[in-house]
Image (cartoon, rainbow, N blue to C red; front, top):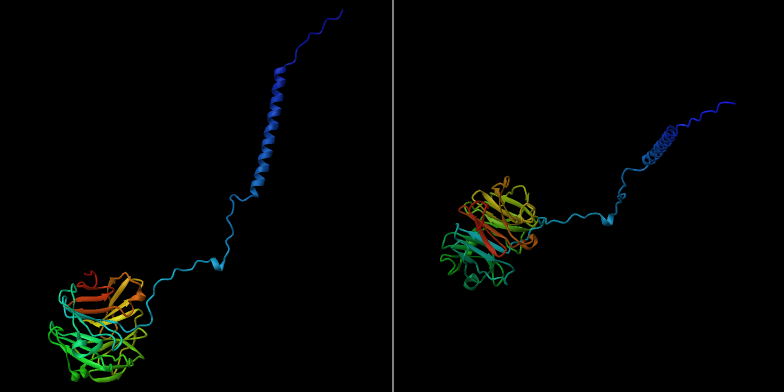
Length: 321
């Protein structure tokens, strides 16, 4: 009788191990395949979403904000200012003849108070063209006669308490007759102006033959021989008035980007050197100050009449009071 075969059970735990390993290998391969596919796809997609493509639309393009610019045309000033020192000065307004009375005002306290005088009532002069202070008591004026608007000269020796005319002294004065702005009257006689229209004039008190003018095209010219010859025109856009100084001439301009108000500049006698002197801040548009600014310099003090105030500076425009 044959011997029965011995039964040896298979190692089931080892079999399960190989199954697990096979499944794990399959999963790893599957993960690698998926990762590769996703990587290939992402390579074809931009890393970030692009912004909108810029387009140019003329109607929507930015327009620079306009800024104030200095005027290229000058007009005759309607204000006159003449200082003697840091305390005494005369001021006046002017305009059409004969409707504008000649009522210059005097201050002896640095502009704190003003006293009005009346040359129209005394000597029938209107529309003042020049006011020159000679001393604390003496003032000289050139205006237009109330009856026919012809140029007239008058003066006061009592600080404007009383005026008297003197026709003989008119020929010794510098002035421009509004009826003919192409001609300049000088102590040496009439002379043809170097431009079509003179709107401003400043004569040196220490030299009858020297003066400077402003033309309607904003050019400034000077003469040392009563208008026989003139300097090369110096263009000063935005100029509103001028005066004499110890160094030469003082001009006032408005509408300049560097000065929100009245810019003062000192010019040499021959106009070859211009030195910025100072800026008086004025809270008014430049266009409203055209023809309404007056300047003067005396004994080292700058006087400026702009807006509603007359201001002074004893430090070349660094500070004002």
